[in-house]
Image 1 (tube, rainbow, N blue to C red):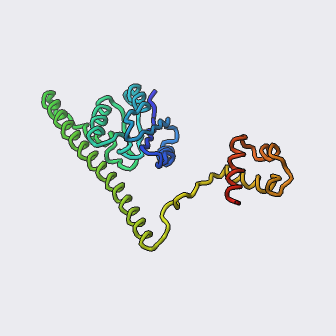
Image 2: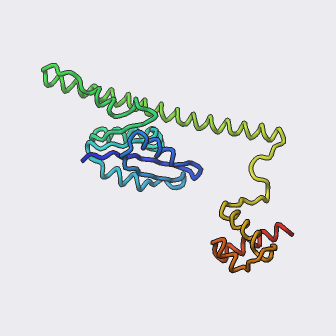
Image 3: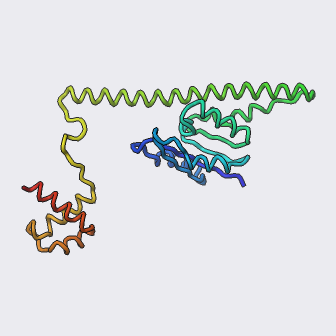
Length: 228
């Protein structure tokens, strides 16, 4: 039985893998989603390695874009070439012209009736198509990197413009991020705890807020520090 896989990969904690999953599922709702995340200091891809080994002819892997398949164009083409030879179908939602189906269809050259000539033609055609695929994959990676560089440039320009206008960029030094959980707990503490004019003891307030003892006293201490 042939299986359709959706391979989704992120390389930083700031990226959101859900976008890739949604894009794939919107077109291939039955795809088996394989997710992976790694950073520049950890190049291993265990989920990909397991998938790569169990793929069989007729299986399909769907990527949101070609840059999710590998770290660079050279590695990407090596993967592409091997899986193409194994009869695995590759689909790239943002670069459909690189799909293996496009090149596989192009190899169906009409037969001349001369076996030796037909083999020579097919071999030459395959070599040409793989060179073309390699070039297209390289271009796709370059375009992807160009988009990232452009985004970084626009972000940097926005930061410099905001600084020139005297605006605060990022969090102020010494400022603290308050999570939704902490904010909700602090509201309960200030409203109901006796130390803030309420009617509940610490244990009763803790139960009402539904938080651990350590978290409770941490939040309460922060509130007192802010009030003093």
